[in-house]
Amino acid sequence: MTLSPEQFNKLVTKDEFNELKTEIKEMGANVKRILTGVDGIAKKHQTFEVELTANQAAHDRFEERIKVLEEK
Image (cartoon, rainbow, N blue to C red; front, side, top):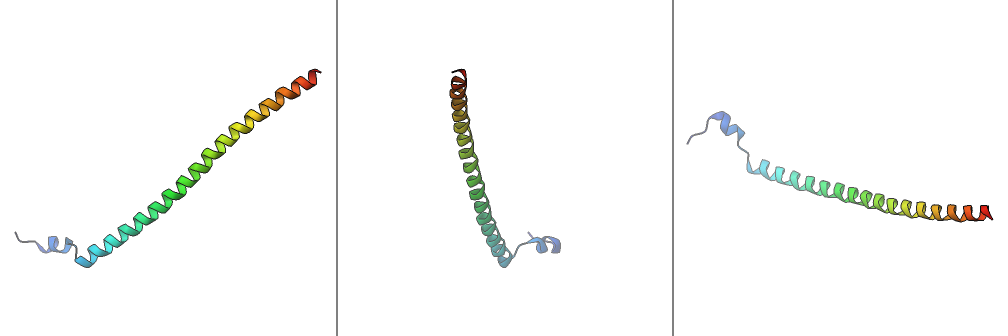
């Protein structure tokens, strides 16, 4: 099967292929760093929600104690 000049020009060279492989590896490393950052933010958000709930429960307990003291 013979290639037309247009088809031949679309073929990738070994150097171009190796360059593309390197770029893809670098992109993979960048994506990994981004995902690690997102995981860290998600963990902090989850911890914040737990602390917020605990603080709200403590404030509710304090409010009930204050109401009892006000009645006396």
